[in-house]
Length: 89
Image (tube, rainbow, N blue to C red; front, top):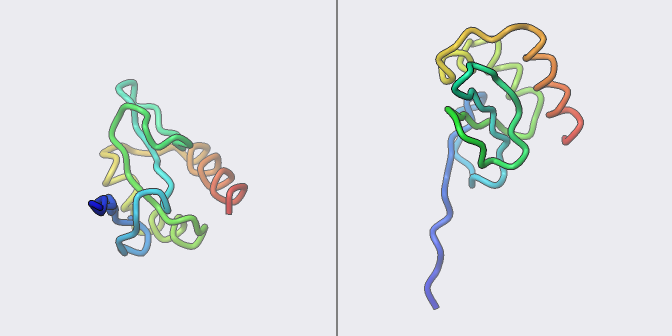
């Protein structure tokens, strides 16, 4: 049997590579709205982050999240994404 290739993505918090399904995706769409992507398939520029709030905090403090999405992120968006990660953790 053929073995399937597992897509790998890098967490922007800890900068380690993981299988895509083990990470959360944060998306910026055409209207510059930034939100948490539960499905991992929404259109737009996406970035991946571990399922830990520590990695999210690291990404916010080092400004990697705003750099990877190429946009300034309002504080309420940070809070909503952090709440989603904490809920699913």
